[in-house]
Image (tube, rainbow, N blue to C red; front, side, top):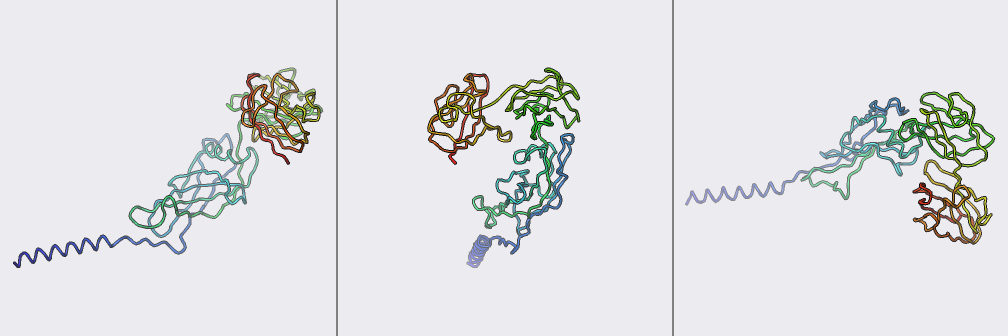
Length: 343
């Protein structure tokens, strides 16, 4: 009998012990003022194509909320004073104190947000997102994360664009670029018939003029017959170039000249790759066409402009019109989209 009682008491003790363990959780206490991450140092952010394989290091400090947690860190950048609206993410991962990347990798990321070949004031911050370790019972789920950010650190940044040729003495700052870096450059440029221009390679410090259709090192300036937009192509290996009129315009009964030439010419925005115009129109129709001719023309609906498409009908008013050409060649297969906003 005594033996059975002893076994019974041991059994009751074990149940009490287990029950106590189940109720005894791990208490997680957050600091009243969690220690946010910081940026200690930034690398030299005047980026150079010739240094593309060099390694840049951003030095920071980790977040400390007062309890154990897994953190993902984001190095973000935005225009100075923009409070990280539409920020670009430079890095995301678990690294906090030493964030490393090559010059070329950083340049490619920063080009998404900032203009190439000019100095831009940029704010950087490290943002940490915490996921609490399983079983702690602390807040910090994926639907309600704990986020801590460093103060903004400002720096002047210069990113480089594609290999380019700058137009000198054309009247405006503009360039043509080489997407493959193979010495073949192209782009749309706005030219003035009174201004002879040359092409400067800033990387090689070479300047090209022309004789006939040949590029000539330190040669004479290049001229055109009429003001307007042109497609300029140059090959610095073969020493050749071509320059062809590329003037997109509005034509139609809603425009000043009706269906007759000259069309109302649009301007080009190289950063967005769009053509645009602000014009006062009357009740009527418009279409888009190239070089005052019908071989290349676009009509149709907002998201489906096609060759020989239908007229676009407007009521009288002042409009800002934007055209995006999605297919330019071959002629007869051109396509695009447009926006029209009444001012």
